[in-house]
Image (cartoon, rainbow, N blue to C red; front, top):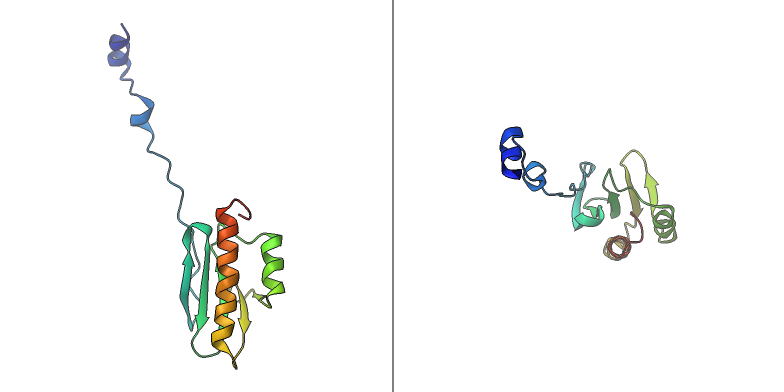
Length: 121
């Protein structure tokens, strides 16, 4: 009887109708001119960039996973400031660009790990 109803109304199991859920990949803005990615935490929506000419390192968030107040506070404590024209958090140190990059990578990693643990976005 159930088979007759399925055939008559062309019913299909729900699994055949809806594709499995797949979360969307984060959408990052293009890196500003002169910046290249050096660390990607794609699932967390965080990436670290560096500028080869100025000694500037930066943290960029995907458009759909913006930083929380706690994350902003953490970046400010580490000396990063938000640059709205580049849509990223930056820190410049022309004298010690390597140390600057290490510090910014550490902050980016900490934020990504906190997000993976359920803290943050």
